[in-house]
Image (cartoon, rainbow, N blue to C red; front, side, top):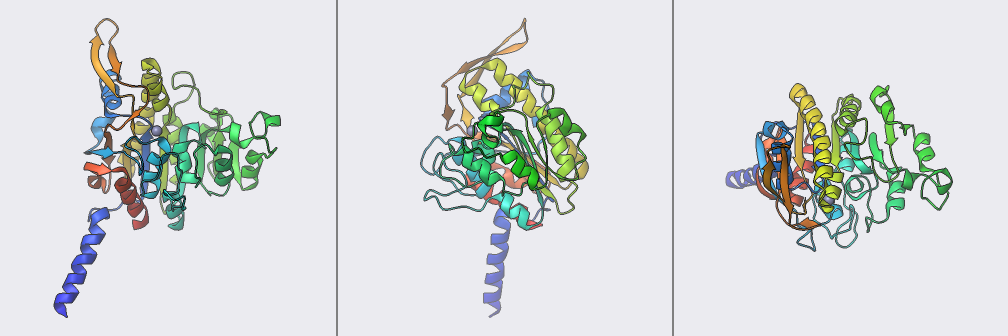
Length: 360
Ligand SMILES: [Zn+2]
């Protein structure tokens, strides 16, 4: 009997430590996704932008980003692995390979009475944010994703997306005449399409900000940074004593790499770095926040090939114009950060995040 008891205890202890370990659990989690940010993008960022943010993370790991059906993932399957803990087919959002709904980490955080937030530089209906807010068979269903966001109960949502929330008559692209901005307001959200307002929010209400039809202007063509949006989100979400889960995406790093556009890439990377800086600033003070920076996949396999001594700008070469299967980096800081070292599958990372979101 005693032997049986100890065997059972061992099984329980092993299974409870597999994902969560014995280290302190974070109250808050900030997940920063540099879309398409391969290791070489990180290298270029550190070398060219004098960016020391990445050096502040005590744990560094690598992620195999392949999806359930392809060696090379797209952003939908990539983000779904992180938001649900399951690999799925390319193009799918929050559903498995058979289109069965998967519970996502926002839904789990809500059950624990935590607040949730999203800050992105693309439309909030785009693949990466959608994986945390919706469940659809195809990432192309952005009008449906907007409808699902109405019922997501997210607390802070900032990015672009008027195309999908407003009818044609009001400057959007909806043909069903529905005005989902009004619907969000009716649900109690404070809405703004003026980016300057997000920095002077009363922050007592849920917030919904859309600053463009399909995307925010490039990082070097707007008066505010992703870091400023992230700071506002953290100020708002951290009012919840139970904690929060915030996902921030540098969405256009991928688009710049797709275009093999170095200048655009560096502007987006610099903008994303400003978000990392704000997340770390909060976590260093709070001491109860896990910060993880990772990517859904590498894009275009950038190579740092030299340095122009006159301009101080890096020379780069590109291997392709789409995603690759190159492993991406994972940088972790804060309670339980040690769980995120070594080489891991993307769904394994998602399962650990969910386990931590449930742990307190
Ligand atoms: Zn992507």
